[in-house]
Length: 380
Image (cartoon, rainbow, N blue to C red; front, side):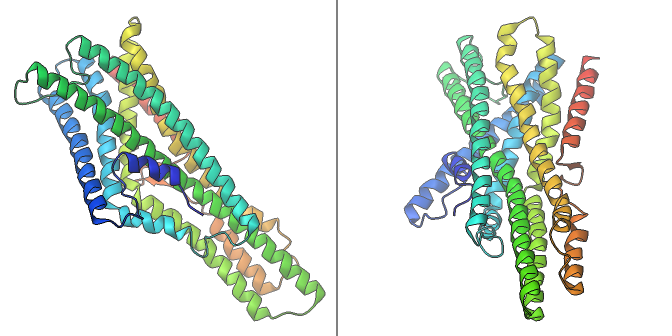
């Protein structure tokens, strides 16, 4: 059973994830060259946008318009760097879900895993569609800027350029934005998918433990069995429960910088985009292309917070699920072992952004309030 195939295909297309199964030296070399070109293009656009803010921008309106794209590109550069530098850790993380104790062991567990895989795929496709609409709006706005003799996005270069170079730069910016959006979608849906896989593992764990307790109860009522063997089985389940927590911690460590950069940039992008929209509310042609982008940013933050909130709820409910099982016929030792699982569940799994923001719906509300406060500050 493969996991997150669609999500890894997306970042493969945009040049930051070479397929693991490739063994040809020539294919690897060509793909690595493609990766270098993509990465340099992303960083070139980000740096030149920052230089424009530093050397050229002299009013709040231009500052709001420029920082909107700069912080988005900065987040893309961060995601690209993390995916490339932590490739082996990500491979090992996904591979761990395909090995014991995480690998589904029967048809019921396969059905649970398939249900979550289909849910992740469905959400990824919907998010991809939303991002495509956003990029389409920005592309139309870019074409209008080009027709008026302006680059799609303001940058600062230390030299003057000809009309031919102008069109080359314009094409470069539009292509770079398309790849940046693809990287955004791929990376975010991968993180989202890894979050949701935690819920899948917890549900498999509950199903597996429930069946174990049913079997134990039947054996105790029917005939005497080896307590040592049964104790070993319970110990394996405790190990499995702890390994789910370890998996979640590993996900958080690998993508910690991505979450921090995303949320820090999102707050600034949201407040500046809303400010820009409010300042040009009477100019439909100026805001129609930014409106879809702003909606996409709100959804972008919501995806992280909602999936993190689902993990918190699911991990916190594991203890209650264990308590509802038919444990009354078990031995004292086995009850104590189940108690260990319940006590561990009192501390739910939480994904955090550099220990500053917890991925939850409560944090999402706080981010919206912070963005609104920053928006009011800009208006003054």
